[in-house]
Length: 262
Length: 270
Image 1 (cartoon, each protein chain N blue to C red):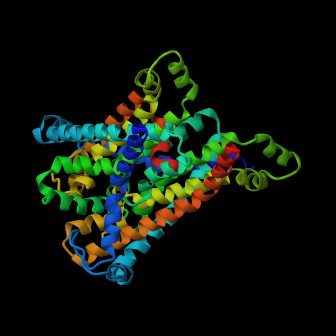
Image 2: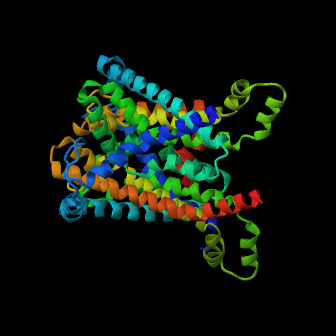
Image 3: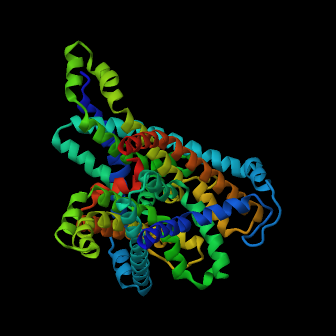
């Protein structure tokens, strides 16, 4: 057979089918069957009727929402100041804000935990606060980067034009810069919101024993309940798909997670 | 003036928030203290423990081996996949790109759990074979390599490849000697990205690893639940070592960019 570049796509397509598509199909199978392999909707109805799992969903949303807001309130001014400053070595200073991304998250949370321990005395007293602080600490670089990128790509002439036409600094920001930086905000929000619903290790490490969506999968995994765990995975997957479609953000997801490397 | 100072101050405070915990831990890692608070005498014990305890050195070596191994496989797969997808018919190309996007946007908990369900639960592949773990990490990393290589192929001048063929090169030779060299930067950054993703992963390893194997993430998470003080403070040393390595790597990677920037800055000043 003649070698052609097209055929190079085949091994990767096969790989994706086996390790990406097939696992998801099996999630469907396990989610809608019981231990005897019979079809059932029980896992599905259980999630949406049990007060415990609904409480978990609510708690996940609360933590994710507050974390995202706090991240945004801290990251936006950071990105804005950086992008509009005339600092000589802007890219180096940006690097300082991104670098924590590359330090193992469990070690960073350990460090944060030791500090919070000293400040709070007893970590177990402030579970919600700890979770939000921990996730903000962990995820903030992922919010700063896309907002910085968007603002720094804005044409400075737009701002100058607004000023020339009589807008003051605040008006220029509210009417010009902020609306134009929405794509960066959306991208940053999706980089923070979804992990905040699922990354239960941050809670575990900071002595918050309340479940979030990710913890449900962890607990089903620990109990060898593949059916229950698959259903939660599917529900999460559905939420992620809806979120991605709403924000139209799939293109940026890689750039966000890849940090400055991509 | 006040405005300018408060802007700088804000940036500074955010940096303090991001770095203070790591730096405080770094200071304490050089002492005999077992808790943050009163500093007790200077000591390198934590570093000695870190590099002489088999459990710790084994865990670190395992993490690095896994990261480099999985990243290497992912780089080969992702690069070949990107080249293949770029030259495939539209349908095939869209099919690959769509599937490729799933692990990127999916939560790692779901990716890890689904791979465990397929390989371990349905296909009965033992976790002790390391196959689920390596497969999981390759699945996490390869899509990012794909995304890192793809723009390079798109930007490439395709007539060079055609010219090589016209001048008598076999398609394979044209691929390895003409096409590949042009996309090396994408491959390198894809590999680097894959290594960092694997090093930082907790969830996929958690759901697919053998019980006796630990990565830094799974080990640290477990250790924080235990109360073994020597291990706890040795991990402070590990955190410091990793911090220093990251700083050095980032510096090395940016020195060229920095030089260029300062040269341009100098020109502007003239």
